[in-house]
Length: 224
Image (cartoon, rainbow, N blue to C red):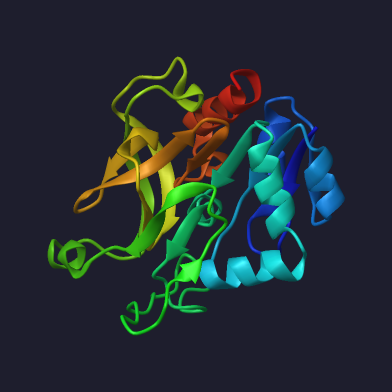
């Protein structure tokens, strides 16, 4: 059974319907015991990093997700669900409550928000250089992903020129470049997909990315 983690932040029904469209049943749950018994786990999310971690703690989901990741069973993070897999984020808590909100600048005097720590690395905001290039933050819309290395998520797909839908102001900087499975350019290259053993994640939304997104979800189910 695929379990989609419900921590109150994410387009859960859209993700569930995306799996249903490829013929896969998926349960949406906020129960730690559902996470523990899942065959495959999906951590979606839209909003702010600090709020997401607070919601996961409130629902007693932090340790079950960490324990799931340690079992070797496939885990997929989507958008904010990718970011919380990392060690920490510079995002100011509650600064961005949706893809359309304008994020606040990071406070250099404030300690970073701690994540799940399943993938070493940190989450940073798009810099002012991106804005000076005439690009808007948040990064919202379609953009290309260049496949980097080997990842089951992109099995059978072209290595360049495949477009996915994005909505984010922050992006992951993994400590180990070897886990970067996909890169996207938005004023500068950033990691738009990661794969570290059984831990996989995309900054883009496969559930909103039409045929390419369906293929990613199919690969998550059939190639992991």
